[in-house]
Length: 128
Image 1 (tube, one colour):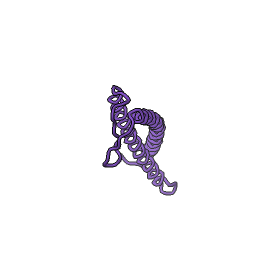
Image 2: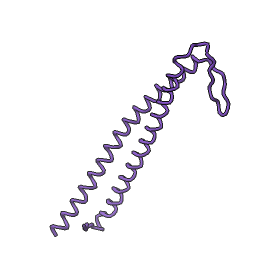
Image 3: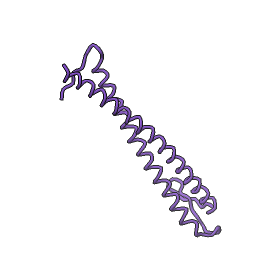
Image 4: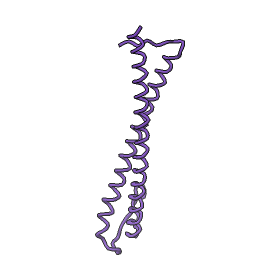
């Protein structure tokens, strides 16, 4: 397949810009996907720990990790912080899902534009 690109009209520059835009969209999509996995893992971890703590009474000794140490902390405080963390992670995941949707749409639009550009120049070549 050969493309007929006009140097005077900046066709080469247009192709490079489109490819760069598609690469950036792919990178951003990969970054959003990685962040979504991280947030989902954090949420699951908080929910699992909260499930383990839910069966324990308020007088149970509980410890919170602080660096390499463990500090005794009221179990109700730990439950509250884990609930808050799980809710925050869910909100973050929802926001990232929305961002992923927009990035995917933008990447699709870039792909369509690139395909249209290629078809336009292939058609010009075949017509010539």
